Image (cartoon, rainbow, N blue to C red):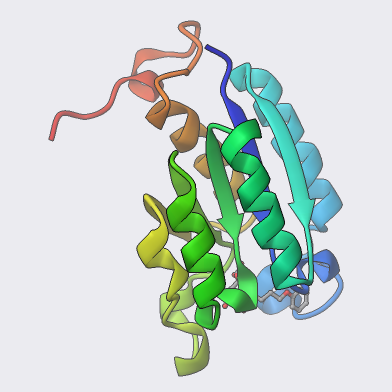
Length: 161
Ligand code: CA2
């Protein structure tokens, strides 16, 4: 099985690398997308990668993902703290959802600490910087049981619970 991944990026992330580098680093979203495409090739996965500043556009992508993707990786950015509609859309998607934040939101100010969309996610990754996207892709494909057999065993096999 070849996993189909959709990565969604919320508002203002198109400006990554240009403002507040002390929080979000200097890597641009284009560079992150390139890294994600390289990772998809390594994982034998297909990738749709989107960014929007508009809640409704993100919701339309999530609806489309019900047909076109097996897993969603989403950095809802500011919508993490406000959007009941994103939560509702994510709950309708049937596959694994990994919520991702570049910064460690738990170490941020009160306004940026409580993601309400996390409750609709299968797992949450935060604080790893842009590498979080790579980690999320690996975890999503592992969840789908679609990691290439050529990958070393520790990357493929879940640790027993
Ligand atoms: O760390 C993350 O990935 C965040 O989702 C980024 C959001 C923030 O509201 C979350 O608390 C954590 C903000 C994205 C804003 O993007 C910017 C990009 C460049 C310069 C300034 C902000």
